[in-house]
Image 1 (cartoon, each protein chain N blue to C red):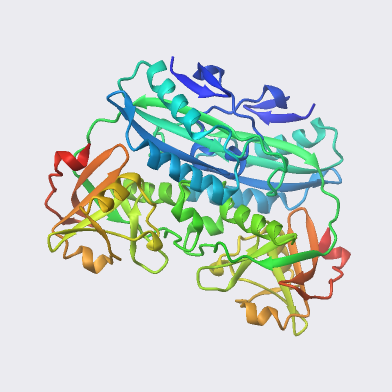
Image 2 (cartoon, rainbow over the protein chains, first blue to last red):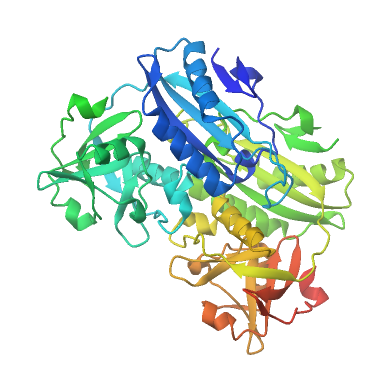
Length: 262
Length: 262
C-alpha cells in the first residue's frame, strides 16, 4: 500500500480523500511538480521549489508550508514508501470552493505528495507534430506548471492514434514549443537549441540546467528548421530521451553524456 | 447536508471522496456542465447533454451513463436536495490513472452531480478587458467545456484586482472571445452580435438559443468595435447580466426581454 503525504502527514493512499468541491478537481485550479529522488536526495530541489513558488504567485495560491517543510515532506514521502529511487509528484490546489469561478476569500489549499518507482529508460521516441491543438504562448499558464494539462493530453492522444510515442506542440504562431511532457532540444550545426519560454516552452528544470551550463541555448524553432536538425532530444526532470523519428523522418538517436542525463 | 450524485446514487457530500489519482484532480482531465433546474425541469437539457457528449468525444472519455440516465440523475440531484430552483453541476473526469499523461487503457470515469441554490440576479457588471492572459482559439478546448479553467480564473482575478466584477478575454489575435464565465453580446446598430466560436467563444447554450431564434448573430468583435456598442450583455446558462461599464467607459444597462432571460 503506497503512502501519500496529505494534510500534514503520510497516510495510506486509500485513506486520502479529495473533496468533490476541491477546485483542483472542479476547475484544474492548481499546480504540480514532478521531482526525481535518487541517492537520498531530490535532484534540483531548489529549482523545482522556485517554479512552484512562482506558479503560486501567479495563481495567487498561498503556500501552506514553507519551502523547508515542503522539502522535508518530499523526502519523507520517498523514504516512507521505501523507494531508493522515485518519481515524486507534489500537487498544490487552491482547495475547496463554492460554485463558480471566484476564488474563496480564505482559501485552504490542498497539498499532496505521492511517490512512484522511477520509470525505466525509454527507447528513442517516434514523434509526430500535433495538428489538433496548439500551445498558447500568450497565457501565463505556459510558463508555470499548472494542472491544466488537457492540450498536452490531446497532443499525446493524437500521437497514440498515429502510432507514435509522443507529439511536439506548436504555439499559436506555428513555432515549436515543447513535447507533451518534455522540453525539446534540436542539435543543429553542432549546437543544442531549445525553444524560448516566450514561444510557449515550459521552463523545465533540466532545460534550465542545460542552458545555465552553456550546453544549449534558446532559439525559436520552426518545423522547417527541424528538418535540418542532426538530432532531437526530449528532456524532463525524470530523464532524457533520444528521438528516432519525427513525422516519419528518421533522426540519429543522440547519445546524451552521463553528465547531462543524471 | 447537501447530497451529491456519485457512483450511481445520491450520497451525503461528506461521504463523497475523489481519489487523489483522479485525473480530474491531477491534470484537469475532464468536462463539466452547469445546468439550470426550474419548474421541475432542466432548461435546455438536450443542448447541455449534446455539448457534454461532444466534449467526451474530443477527449476520448467514455460516458459512464446513457444520456437518459444522466438526465434522470440530474433531476434526482435537484429534487433530492429539496431545491425547486437550482444550479446543477455535472462533472465528468477520466477517473483514476497512473503517473504520467498517457490515459489509462481501461478508464473508469468519475461522474459527479452537485446542486446549489440558483444565484440571485446580479446588478449590471463593471468589466475590464483582461491583459494578463488570452484565450486560445486554436485549441479544441475553446469549443468544449473542459475542466481547464485557469485562464478564465486568471482573468477573473485580474478583474478583482482592478475592482471590477468580471473580465472579457481576447483571443490570441486580439479579438473578443467571451467573459470569464459568460458569453458576450454587443448591441451595435440595433443588432445583438456575439463572437464566433472560431474566435474562441465557448459555444454557450443560451448563446446558441439566441442565435437559433434569430435574436443575435455571430460577428468577429474587436475592442474598437465595442467602443461603438450601444450596450453589452453577458449570458450563461443560469442567467443574463447587463453591463454597466467596460474599462471605465459607461454603457447603458440593457433590459433583456423576459422571453430571452428565462
